[in-house]
Amino acid sequence: MKDNCKKIRQLLSESDVQAALAGMAEKIASWAKSEKAILMGMASRGIPIAQNIAQILKSKYNLSVPVGSIDTSYYRDDFHYRKRVNNPPLKISEMPADVEGKTVVLIDDVLYTGRSVRAALQAILDLGRPSAVKLCVLVDRGCRELPIAPDCTGLSIETVARQEVRVCLSPYDNETVVWLVEIEEEVA
Image 1 (cartoon, rainbow, N blue to C red):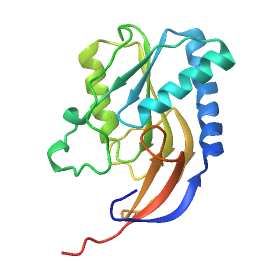
Image 2 (image 1 turned 90 degrees about the vertical axis):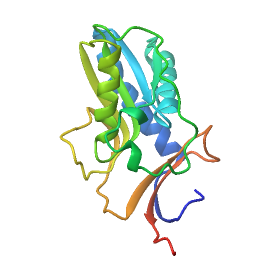
Image 3 (image 1 turned 90 degrees about the horizontal axis):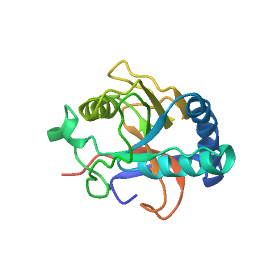
Image 4 (image 1 turned 180 degrees about the vertical axis):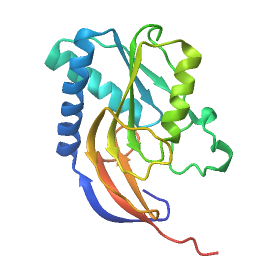
């Protein structure tokens, strides 16, 4: 984290992240056993989370669930107002399978206002009509602006306006950990 933030506390260690992913995979396995499912990781950190969950599904539940990725940046209603902080370049949506008639399990690192999820829903509907869309997030930090709720969550916490949740994951970061941070005022 090289931007203007101060670490408040560690929310999840690497082993906590792995345990949360295992719990999320267990919930997803129940859907994937009875329905045709596809995992869609939201750029950027939702992608490695989706890939990790797919590996858990394969090794623990013997389920091969296709994994895709989606970058919803251009679908966001606030795209032109957002300041991109410490993010890798935009990713192109990658679809290993058609979404038509399938259960799309949308996976993201942090759920906050709901705007990214709303954008992802629009992007998915542009690709076809799934039978259902489920939302799984590693951290739900509350403070929703849109009526969107996760079907599966690794950790739920309440934050205030000056706080953010920072998910650090390989290969994007040097460590796998989740921090609660406070955004510091920029001095002009």
